[in-house]
Image (cartoon, one colour):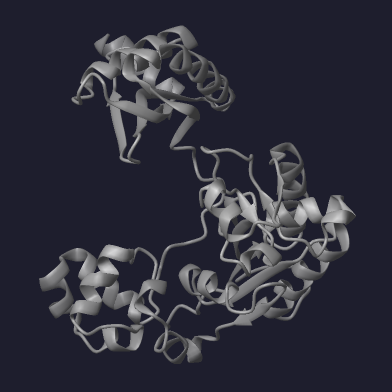
Amino acid sequence: MPTPPRKIIHVDMDAFYASVEQRDDPSLRGQPVVVAWKGARSVVCAASYEARKFGVRSAMPALRAERLCPQAIFVPPDFSRYKAVSRQVHAIFARHTELIEPLSLDEAYLDVTHADNGLPSATATAEAIRAAIRAETQLTASAGVAPNKFLAKIASDFNKPDGLYVVRPRDVLDFLAPLAIGRLPGVGKVMEGKLVALGLATVGELRAFSAEELEQRFGRWGRRLHELSLGIDEHPVTPDRPTLQVSAEDTFEHDLTLGELEPHIRRLAEKTWAAHQREAKDGRIARTVVLKLKTADFHTLTRSLTPAQRPASAHELAEIACALRARVERPADSRYRLVGVGLAGFVEADRYAAQYELFG
């Protein structure tokens, strides 16, 4: 017997950070709100729908946002408040299913295939979740319902803000056919350009190419593209994904040389180590130190090292991160606008202890 299709909901809060600010300060309602610190190095964390009408978007330099929307009201982010609201929203999710995969503070996948919540359908569940979010947080959320994760995520964007869109299994091919090829997950600007150069602008046009043709041109990714064009995605909703990396980073007001970065690296190493210690309480420790740099012309560099014995303190983490600067093969007078310190390569603490005892 064929496996029945999953019932997946993707919930995405509408302009989350900006909406929290407008909720908590009535004077901001109806105004173009930009959540960001003002300044040459700041980037936009979120923009209200009133600001988006002027072309302001998340991750945009704050100076550009100010040029696009001179009347914008800039509000510094308050992540403690956003996290508190996010916990409220996730508590609402948990009333309907245990299979919740958070993507960020403001969005998540829910698998309600076998939800025992007394509701007749995934659509009814999505409606109940959105109603509860509105009633309990005074915020709005949009949702997509579909047989798999990537379709649900696309669908949640269709009726924003405060909307719901349902893609039933029988409608998958028709839903995908007219979409721009860049809507498929993993198709960035470069890949989209390559596909458009082949005359493939929509998912329907991509579907006309066989899996073999696409694999010949793009390797295994070509076969994956063919599956996506048919709406095939078997990735399950994965609750409580293990942390892959903890990190802290900072953007400077003025660009600095490598030699000037040491005090900043040490300060960030303290923050990263504190985050790592929270993971360690759950029995997971990291082995790999990562140094991240962004040059004055916006190129990102990373250098990493997995020492024979993992760093055992913030001081050791800082020492290794500082030493990684020697692996940056750029002129000595090169300048950097951002530095970050991370820990990756998480393993179970018991397993690491056993290996170290055996080989250390």
